[in-house]
Image (cartoon, rainbow over all chains, first blue to last red; front, side, top):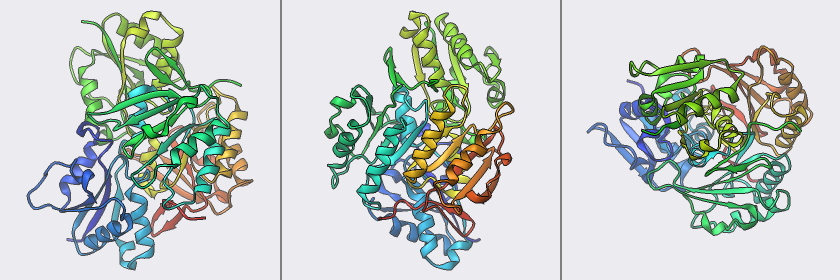
Length: 247
Length: 247
């Protein structure tokens, strides 16, 4: 039997947010490859399934390991959180294919979509992504801070709702504060800002504030930050962005 | 028993992409409210469940109807395609709450996240949303075309991957061509463009081309269009955007 590789996302955390297609892909795999905490979200599905847990910082090594396993004939599932195509393992797999063994290009590789963190975070508070929006990762491990600043500024000037992934980690603490400072030069001080920690999991927590008061230290590596557009507002206990406003 | 309202998304089409949480919310509802084709994706879950199908063009009326049902004590599920918070019914519900009966602000309202079309479309071709990206609806029913153009230009200049929702409908055919013309003034002519029709359904179809050759007439109301960033590229039969590139 020839090998295969499927890249899946567990969704934001709760088992009820993992799609049946992803559950089926996990059940069919002989080998699971992923960051330990994401693998821990996957129940034991079959006794003969091997788990290859790794550190979060070595995505390309993990991708190569998964591809080598598939090339050796194993049925491999690479496990991300959220959706595997959004700041997660799917892009790392194709980067590894591009720079790796030419045989890898002939492998049966597919991606299963999932519920990404910003959708779960938005659902917890209402509908803040109800208008045009963008998603920016604040991690400058793989791109320059100048590129991130350029995108933040463009998104603010064009009045997008902005979802910020990877706002902070143990190794990175200053980026979110700098991002807020930059956004304050363009967006109004009363723009809603939402910190949603562990969105879509049993222990989710929301902090809703305004851009003028947003404190970057509220965020950690499990937090998704949403900065509203000019039309984003509160109604009752919900925050939402209208679908449009003629202007 | 007091009423409640949950806004759900069926996911992109295949039942295997609807989350278990959404399935449970649908099974608990006494009333389903939604656009007919989305309601048709929901199997009959209980004999006493009422279905209120409506036309796609009357979202705010549908929202008010759903809220009135909940206020009368019914357990209402409002059914969108994809994720209900992305160019779908969740924002319409909160718009209706804001302008409607003050009692509606006291209702038990929640949103269940789902797999939105761009994630399913991306998964079909590889990982084109692997870097920073934005989502823009080309419908100018509720916002001005000038606003849309401003956002397209900003997104292109800051080198985002761009997902275009609602690229065309029976009533709107010129917007996508105008969007491509605008994007060609900023993005390189060899930028990958993906037309994914009925993403995440059994009859999905992908057309991969380049910005120079992109033909707007390929898209209809079931198509999601992805326009790459400068780094988006092909490897084997897949299209992907690297997670970053130091520049």
